Every structure is written in structure tokens, then in C-alpha cells.
Length: 102
Image 1: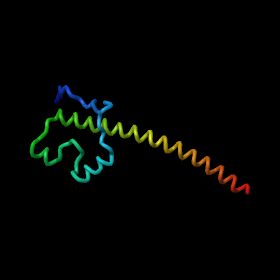
Image 2: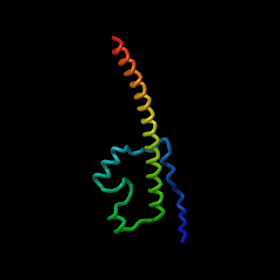
Image 3: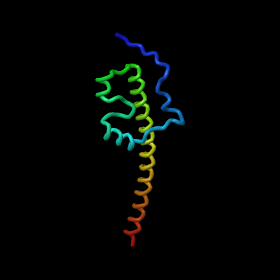
Image 4: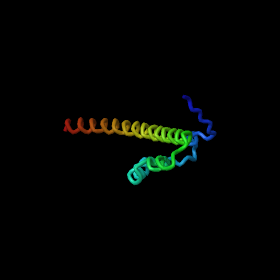
């Protein structure tokens, strides 16, 4: 059976310039303290109150979009580290060559 969600608010607000993306460190602390993702209901809340399926879908998409933004940042950081590592390797090779010549 198909379920159609007609919510007008979708999670694309995550990509707005003024969106306050929670850091991975803050997310980790929240998870350690609360045992669930920020802005997501806990198992106890779902069991007690239930939850609108459309709302859950929007929140899940929000979390996917947030993770995507974190992945993009991590890729940029990784590229920068690789570039720095290559420069350090080249410098080390020069130093080792000089040291070997003396």
C-alpha cells in the first residue's frame, strides 16, 4: 500500500547558508548522553506517543542531508591533509638526500 506525504516543509533548509549545522563532536556528546540522534524522538517517546510518519521522514532526510554536508567537509579536509602530506614527503626526501650526500 502506498502512503503519500503532502507536508509542505521539506528538509532542504539544511542547505541554507544560515543553517546551524551541529558539529560532529556535539552530535557525539548528545548521542552519549541521550542514546538517540538530536531532534529525533527516542524509542521511549515513540512507544508512548507514537509519531507522524511524514514528520519522521522529514527528520530522517534532515539527518541524511546533515551527514552529506559533514562528508563534503571531511572530503575537503582529507584533500588538504593529502596535499600537506605530499609536500612533507617531498621535503623529507630532499632532507634525506642532502643528509646522504654529506
